[in-house]
Length: 484
Image 1 (cartoon, rainbow, N blue to C red):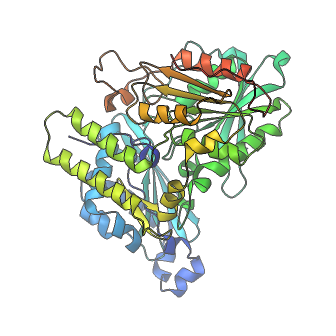
Image 2: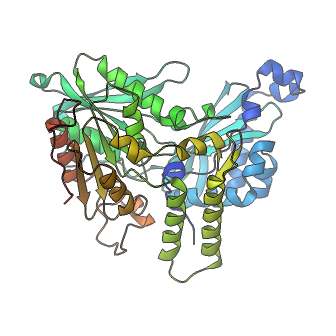
Image 3: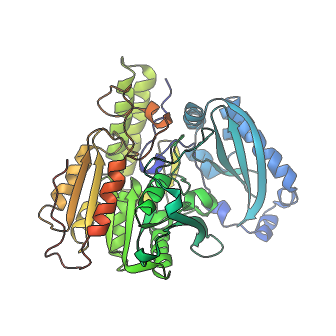
């Protein structure tokens, strides 16, 4: 049994291990040579490419001890050979058997030689990043989201003739993020209401691609077909994974870029600056109140499957659920649960320091990240806002449960600017659960089935945006709906 469940937040979709060495990140080329790294610094790009290709080949051969021996000290302390194996199983569980490395590009970033690989598997391709430090050790190792070989086809509610798409850039050099602005064609609709889409955790592309599905592309094309502009962009962990070293928080991962995207829209003549909304999914939904709290330009937020409970609670819950789907208890299943509970205990540790590293389901994460989330209450932050809020939830979502949905409802009870929509047969991606899946909630196999964001989600979001009040007062506004 392979535990390839797409865990929320840190592993919001199936990814392999990620390890960044804070000490290595601070080295410059000159500093590396002074430290005795002349031989490694003198290596050619071809040498670093060969090293990176060998890492992937070793993983495919299940030589996890060999790869672990090549890790830089800080990464090796957190990312054990067993965790490398579990991470690789996550990748192959979603993408199939490894076939080859199709492409490689080498660059130098802050003293690291960063090799970006395109890896070909039976059913998908995956981007991989290998960072090699001045001593020739692996200071960074990350696999991105599987890019399915099944072509995406537009949903029936999308009408490509009714909108245009143009490339945009979110943020500034050297770490700018490529994105796409989807604009309705109808000139009578200008200036348009607009939505910024904010992904869940993990290194997501601008479409939030998971298996054969692209929920953010569905949302962009569906909303734009109805006269609403949409901005989506690659997440920072996807475009610039090498920038996550040392201490960092969700501000650097998500919040700052979302606010930059809002500012980009506000400066466009086609966009109504008083009607810019943020729609966050999963981690993005949990953070939507935080994004809006610090940005008066945000006119309202849509929380799509955002959690109100602590991350560590969800990790244990999700692993236990996946183990339960296998039926009889197995030693592997019990080990997975024990590892999840160990992760939760580490995240709750009252003595955790910002400069420590915490292993969250095999992914080394800065202690500052965990402490920052620990201090953030998404529901209470939302309750303090004075803008319209729409909370959307799929009832068969086993990553973010009904307990989280009820958490939003309790916090926003009596708020006339809060609305709620519950969808009985949708899972975490807001795609219908296939008829063949008879589990009470969704199952991992559902993520591999092609589908589209349900049309009622598009219609409800569009109607809410078009009907949302433009006043910041809590009096009046959209009546609170109790769900469906």
